[in-house]
Length: 223
Image (tube, rainbow, N blue to C red):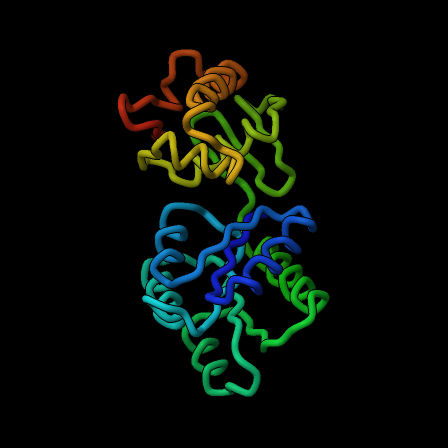
């Protein structure tokens, strides 16, 4: 599960991000509203932790813009203690829950688990393109209804491409999604091509008709 944490307090941001990664979540962190929107529009997230008071664009503006764009990712708003009006506005504006600062780690994790569980129960776990199908809950893949054994990285690549079906995805964005902060474009420039080549082989896409290469850009899955 991938979570975006948006807060302008560096210490809190670092603490929450570290806790999430210790719990085996993939966590990205940004300090302002504009950076949050850039990340959200470029990457699929399972949950967004969104502070209200942010520089450049405040949390309410970020929430409004992603909902207007049709992004239904669950949002947990972070509010200062006692700001009841902000909580009401957030929930009315499309937030799924709120948590007042200061909060305990245990309560934060409980809220996150509840929202992720609710989101999983209410969403369709299957994604399909061509003869390939993915179950994003069980992390299983099939080609022509036959199970295909993919590595975690290969599954993440295919999942991201399926999520962006019929849209071009740059090599850099794809690599950043799969490897996160560990990706170094200077020393790992050929990693993506190697993984895509192995992935095509496993799903029977040797001719690249499903995962198509866009020269100088990256890849696209067309259905």
